[in-house]
Length: 108
Image (cartoon, rainbow, N blue to C red; front, side):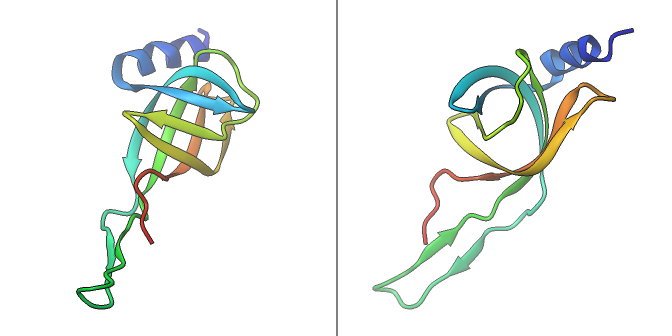
């Protein structure tokens, strides 16, 4: 039994299609997201100069790369970009286990 082939089938069935950015190269993949921080932090000063919402959304991501990559810099899924905070490739299960942070639409 090849673990990588089993993970490929599982990710095709249950994962979301996404793009992996690795060393400025774009590779197709699939992943399963789970939100870690569930609330948005709101900070305001007054009605004229409102700061707005600060997105601090972090996700646990199981990621399968259809072409093997050495590192994962960014992930693009559903027009949202996620930067890799930490994680590594897990040889036992044949996929990447990462913590990512959403970077789209941030306001400060």
